[in-house]
Image (cartoon, rainbow, N blue to C red):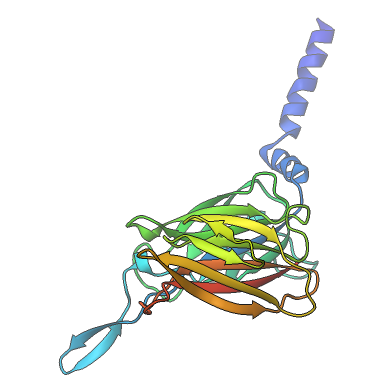
Length: 263
């Protein structure tokens, strides 16, 4: 009887000691340390004007067409702790297609982020997205408009593993967020991408900028989107982001963004 009472008392003590706060701390300690790369992928819509009397004034387009310009950890406790005496940064400015790096993230693999449009005073200007990091220690998180009619009112996310083992220095990942197929040439053999897909490749070793050409097919005709070169920094990877062109430029329906990503 005495032994049973002692065991029961010990069980209660352990249960009280493992408070939710303690359990959260233990869960955090079990999480790996990651370097996040976050990019809001998209282009701002062209200006919209309405006539008011004898003048035209610029008006904000619908929220569904406006990409966010900042994001924050939905749970501030997940933000990497700053140095002693320095306030922890929980929100980040992020203009479209700007790569934001956040080191020493030690939170859950399911990462909720709040997207914000600080200058837009409309209902639905802020919204939350969930990013599934999986086991990636160097995840590249793309946040983009819903490909359906909801647009930026209901954005979607995609995570690409950018670990050095998968993406060493002098390699490239091409992300095709257009509705067109792309053929990317770094050598004579093209890297072919379907719409809404991505592929990675090793770049040729050259002394100087890397030459590339990107073609697409429009109405059965081959259109060269870009034929140029890019100077990749030392110990870096190249991210090529292909988006629908915001302007209906004749013969060039694809907008390209070239981003340097150092290891």
